[in-house]
Image (cartoon, rainbow, N blue to C red; front, side, top):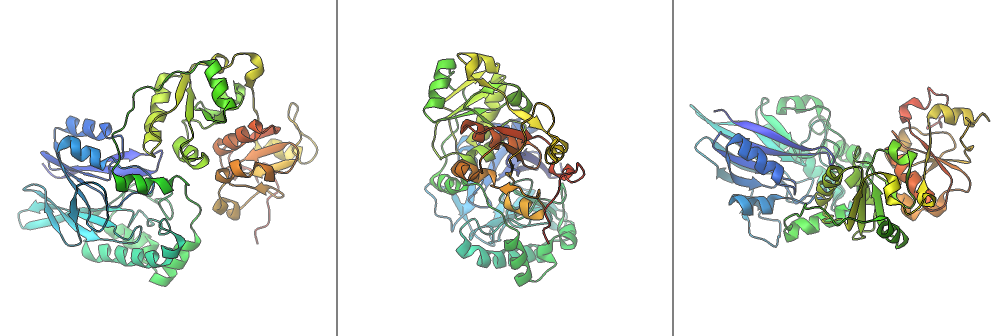
Length: 466
């Protein structure tokens, strides 16, 4: 059979892993930590995993590569220049790794996202020799963009941006226009300089669409670094875990907590996270909890907001939702919840005084309130708080709004001016998280559960960014 490459998407983190096979054996590229998904795919496809490869030591998730190689007996390819605390097959630029009679990998140094980053060209045998099918590019050449170059520190960002430019050009020169590009980042990951502009791509398309292949090195470095926003604080722990060699995951159910135990955990300052949709949270929730619904990038924001290592308790409607959350959290190194509880909010409280609701509005309501016509049932806004990221704020914001990005809010609650706070983000997800933090601090809040791109049409005055 012809070479087949399957995508294993982790949409909550914005990444992709890959399984490439000739129908008999398989290569796995940049696996996430919950490797059961990959083992299931290999079993369903009827192939044996013989090689597991890492394009780089990841900053945005804990790798499952070491454990996958242990379980399958596969060879584990990691850059020779990366100093790690486990056995692997060290590979360097220019090496050719035979996989089967019909598949091989060529190792290409593509530093930029990290100093030791590798890409892997996948060749298949043809009657006339070897033909490149595509290239696994990790955090190097992405769809319409590249991996960011500041994760190893600002002091290296400019140098790495120049390396990134050269690496992308190297791949474009090395491969034919029809070769597929298979990146790990670019689908929502903060490891990307920008987000993917297509669901798939080739070298030829990238030559036409990707700025890294269309502008000079100095211009690329300047543009890339100018466009970078903050990245999650938990990234600081990912490289450490991946260098040490991640332990196997334990996805068995966490201990159940009753209402008294939940109250005690909240009183102790622990994080108790409500995974339900924000509308369910707004209707009724346990006072002292934080809203981070499973319908959004829960693990990214939770990992960014918490003090690393603090106990976390998960609340959800069903055990399956708790299990989904555990799976997301192990991917960023939060291995075990302290406890969990399922059901309805009323079951998590020892009395009605512990239940709270959260008022919601839209941008039309804000526009009316700012002209003195606050809708019935809502308190008038004294403060409009924008919890979006800095690049979003710079692109346009509500006139007179206060800006505190959500990741900064736990440490800056005292910076929010006095009075009733109406909170917004880009959709309502982060606004609800921020409002729950403010309510826990005793503030009166309203969530603007609306898309920001509807604000101006709804009559909300926007600031002049000129």
